Amino acid sequence: MSKTVLRLRHITLAPPSIGPMVAGKLDQLTMARLGHDDALGRPLLIGALPLACAHLGGDLGRALFTPWHALTFGRQTSNIGLMAFDQDGLRQHDGPCLIFLVHAQPPGLQLPDITPGVLRPFAPLPEALAHFEPDSTHHDCRPALCRAIWRAMRLLQGRARDVVPHLPGLSPQSAPAPQPARTTTRFVLGSCLYPGGMLEETPYPGDWCPAAADQSMALLHDLRNQPSAPPLDFALLVGDQVYLDATAGLFDPAMLADRFGAPYLKWLGRPMVRRALAGLPVHTMLDDHELTDNWEPVHTQARSWHDEDAHPSVHHYNRDLLAKGLISYLTFQGPVIHAPQGLSRPKLWRLVGTHEDPEMVFMADTRTRRQLRNTRTIDTADIMDTTQFDALCDWLRRSGQHPTTPRFLACPTMLLPRRRLAVGPTPASALHSDAWDGFPHAMHRLLANLYEHDCRNVVLLSGDEHLASVSFVDIRKEGAAHTVRIHVVHTPGLYTPFPFANARPIDFLTPDAFDFNWPDDAGTPARYHCNVQTWFAPPINGFVLIDAPRQLDPENPIRLGFMLSDSAQAHHPAPVPDQGTSDIVTLYVQPAS
Image 1 (cartoon, rainbow, N blue to C red):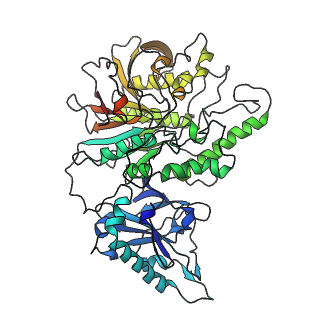
Image 2 (spheres, helix red, strand yellow):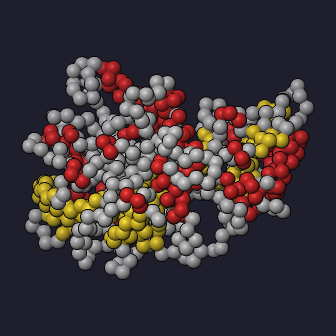
Image 3 (cartoon, rainbow, N blue to C red):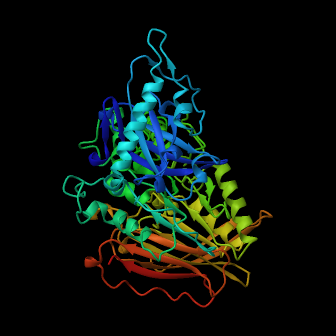
């Protein structure tokens, strides 16, 4: 990004070195995360200019500003902020905006006294500078500061043809032509982006072929920039966006700031990630590596995470990882409705979707609300707390009442197929699994609700295993005539370079058939039979592209595309199981060209 930095005397204009990444919506505000490079100092202002005005002769008067300190998290303790585009400000402009930071430390200017958590809208430059007050011992420097910023902007405008192409995801063009009304929702599903090393990331700047760690993001960028391709509505990232324990404790940072902050700054500052996600609403959920590998609660007197001898410090360390990991997640990528200060157990699960269908996706938290598992509790332990599970079952009930409306349950952990190690001679075998089959009580409850509410239109989305697959699950209740088929889609890893850490098809039972009991609404025990067929994609990095029609019918199914980032290694996948004539999902594999 060094080519885009512009300095004029004491004024520096530079693009954000982190982001911006669209984080979601809050009331009438569009939220985005962005951050700055500490080497340039803390920004004074954030500027936004419609891209159509950034070229020579453009109207610089349409630029709007807000103080950096007005952002949530954008104070002395953080170099990342949460920015709000208000309904009547920037969002009235069609097309993308050029976002830049104004670095200036003029003498005699006092920082604005802004209440924490209050999001202030963008305003013209004089109004934004009015938030600052001159020191009584100095003259009012704001008029001169305003003139200096305008001079720097005019110089920036003269370089627009050089500057704009280097900004992530933007190109110097006019506002896009109006698009015809769409009948489908298009989004991507991804998970597990291991941090690349010096030889695994693409050098910047320059026109380099994407290196191994950037190939999936480059494929997403190319997909979004295809002239004939419909735009993406949002992206779902369902865990392990960062690895706080990337070296499994061997070289992991000991300082808290390095362990819980540096991985996020590296991820959000990677040029290819910024280009691929620029302007795209991104909904995330955390999994274990945002805390530590396979995190789950431990006994208060555990000696280690695998036994129950007295040693309370293990429990305290386990709780500390959860608390600090959650604060980092909320600051850098979590839902915008929560502030990170002082929250140790926030509610992460939520409904996301489009303006037309805000309940399309149930984003479930299957990590932070797990119950303690051991040989005594394995038959009753749940993968989420009662409040979330009740809300999930209520969402399934509403989904079953609208069978032609596609619905998606997204969570980090895989529901099916079951792991071989988790299906052993005793119930305690489930302790070998970190997924839903490691919590059989929760898995049976979910399957029973999917059947009872006839959720044929619900597709389950998950990550974590580093192996793409689609499972066709037929659920039948003993004594009932009909069968309910659901689909479980597991995304490949965005970048998972270590084969020993990646699941293999042989690890799973396929095909699989099992029975379980669950009480019906009247409390009478009912017996269910579950039959599972699974198709595995080639073990290649990538993501899933999903096209969901507004209304399902045999002519308009949900289309699942496995976008694989390395076609040179692609081989012909195993045959897809026979889907039958009543399914609402079709499947295709699209290696990179």
